[in-house]
Structures are given as structure tokens and as C-alpha cells.
Length: 566
Image: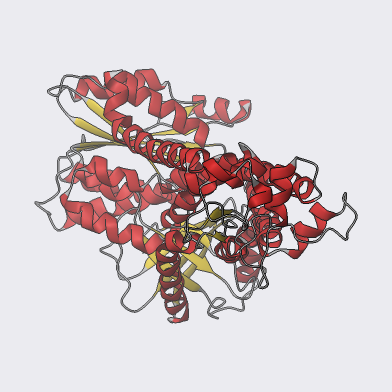
């Protein structure tokens, strides 16, 4: 339990606080509408469905306020910079922005379902009350109106329509009903297109449908303007419902029971969402300004395994290790932006990305580049960023474990390059004293573009007598018997037959228990940062190992898990 708290304690605390606020809002507003004097007559028409509709609405307002904040990338980068003076655990929470975004989205979906079902029941009961099916008091309340038709309680005003069609007519002709339908449909499309299988296989569908959030928020702001849920106004003389509820025939005839007056409450949703909307608009304006800035190609390289390297130059561009940028190619799509981790080091006068063929957008970009005439610049490219990630903190740890899977090695290319530059200038501020690097690939060609950098680092550290600084292990997870036989024949050679490095390639997957045990043994009193850029399945394994091999004793080894999130 103590090991789990080391890696997840603050995250769990934040979730508990968030859940506590949701629970408080739900209970508070449920009791307000369930016991409030101003809603006595409204409860008589609607029963408990009134509270079940309004309590989720309050929770929805709170979560709709939060939903945009985790995707304001520039805001998160600003906060990450502000938290540099704080502990790594606090900054680590910012790297879980998409996880929190999804969590908030699930709550919005759940509360929308409850809110919608409750209001569907409300409309049915309002219709029945308007037609006199629920007794004298309900009929009297539903018949109330004045010359301006503003002090009514029952918003179902027309009874000249077929009784079965009235609820449908009301939903599609009232502000609250129509906006409710629109935002519910938008939410359904957004959520269904966000499923993992859709995002991985049809990213464009996910991208375009996700932008229905604009319609969702517009409908949300206007949704409460229909004033469907109404409350009793304070009048002079006052209408005492305790005395008058059973004397509806005397309303307006005796001084003690004037005709009750009702009003809709003020639309409150915009109070909650206006701030985040303004922040998000500023975010998009900043992205547009960056998009308009000129980007030049320094070099274009096509590596094996359909990996495209772009070396780009942009005025005023400054980066840190492990950061990422969003790229937009108007020749492919004006609207699509895709994240790529930079593989260059901050010490270089350009920034580079490596792009693997992994979908329609990347395939089209690779085709465009491959068909370029000799010496011609690549297609126009918009660049937004850079943005911070967990890998920025790699030099804050005495010992770091870097785990990359396939193209997930890209943030560590930036880190290892930066280390090489720091050694070159003998940077005394380098706190890290040991790095363990693991790279898992399915095919041999994937190693080729990165092995050159490892060879340079290998040579540099040997010359400086720091051969123990970097321990790296390359794992080939897909191979055939011919390759394995070829490797066995050349096993006695000084360099590996696959990569040309002195470190031999391992076949299969790492035995993570053995690796963590070794790291703990070699660093008995260190804080070890474990960084992953790879699939979620591997993330779960490594997170469990970090918890398993961390020691509660602060004087002994502790592992902190960090994962790249886009």
C-alpha cells in the first residue's frame, strides 16, 4: 500500500476531491429542490423527478467548467513552468491531463443520462397535469397564467394538440427541449467517436466529431434560458402554501390566499463555463498565430520502415528535451493537427521529428515528400508548440529508466542527444548519474535510424571513462529462425550483427522483475524516474513494477512512473 501511495497518492487525492465536490453539489441541489419552500408546488406536479433532474444539472455545470481546461496545452505548459519550483509529484499531475479529461467526460455522460431521463418523465407528467388527470390542485396549478403568460407554473401551455404528440411537440418547440436534443446528440457523437477502436483506425472521424463541442457549449449556454423549471415568487400579501394548497378554489378570492406567482430561475450555466471558454478561445488564437509563422525545412530524410525525419527551422523556437509539437499540413487537411515528439536536442539550431507510417495522414505526408523534386522544399507545415511532457523531468532524477516501444523511442532520442552535448561541453549542472535505456522493436529495420546516435554515445562515454553512465538494452520482439541462427554464428564478434553496437540485441521481451531488481540493487538509496513512451498495456506493467520495487523507507530506492500522454 505504501508503494502505491508513492506513485499514485496525489493523483488519488485529486480524484477524491473532485468526486467529493461532485457529490456535494448533487446532494446540495437535490435537497434544495426536494425540501425548498419555493418549489413546493413544482414538486407537487413533478414529484421526485424534479430533484433528479436539477441535481445532475448542477454536477454538469461543474464538469463542463473543467472539461476544456485539460486540453488547453499552452495553459498546461505555463503551469508546468510555474511548478518547476515545486516537487516533481505536483508537475507529474499535469501529465495526466487527458486521463482527467476522460474522467470528467464520463461524469458528463452519466449526469446527462440521468438529467435527460428525469426531464422526459417531467414532460409527461406536466402534460398529464395540464389535461387534468392528477387532481384538483395539479389542474389548478397547470391552468395558472396571466395576460402576459409569464407567471405560469406548467410550461406545457397548449392542449389543442393530440395528447400523445404534445410531449414531442413541446420538446421540439421549446428552447430547453430543442437545445437539449442538440447537445445530447452532439455528446453521443463525441463520446462514441472517442472509443479506442475509432481513434486508432479512423482518427479523422474522431477529430472532426470532437469539434462538435462548439455546438455542445452553445446549446448548453442557451439551454437554461427556457425557464422550464419554475419556482414560487414572493408576493404581497404572501401566498402560504401550507394554508392554501387545499383551497385552490379560493385563490384570489380571500386575502389569505392570493393567486400564487411563479418565475423561472436565472440561466446559470454561463456563469460556470464563461471563464474556461475565454481561456480556450485565447488558446486557439495563440495556435493560429503560431500556425501563421513561417517554417522552413532544413533537411528531409526517409529512413527504413517508412519512418520520415523532418528537420525544421522556425524563428524564436525554443525547446526542452522530451517535448512535442503539433503539425498541420494544409496540403492534406486544413483542420487536422497531429502530435509528434521532437527527436532533436535543445542545443541544436533546428528541431526534428520522426514520423512513422501509421494512418491516412502520415501516409499522405510520406507520399508527398517521396514525390518531391530533387532539392525542393517540402509542403507548407504549420507548427504549434512546443509543449511539455513527463520526459522534461528526466534530468531531475539521479537515476532514470527510459523505456521506448517502436517509434516511442523518439523522446529519448532527444534526451540522449542532449546528454551527448552536455558531455561535450562538460556541463557541471548535469544531476543524472545513471541512465538505463530499453528499446523494444518488432523488426530489425526499426533500429537503423537510431543506432548511429547510440554508437556516438557509446564512443563518447568510453573516451571520457564513463562507460557505466548509460546502460542500454535493445529487444527484438519479432524475428525468424534465420535471423536467430545468423546471430548465433556471429555471437563471438565484438559488435551486434543487427545494430553494429557493442551491446548485443536481446530476442523477446524484457524480464521486468529482473531488470527492476537489478536497478534497485545497483542504486540502493536513489530516486529512480521510470519514463515510458509506448502502449497502455506496457504502461500498466511498468506502473505495477514501480509500486512493487519501491521501498517505503525514504532512505532506500523509490521508483516514480511517468508516461507520455498526447
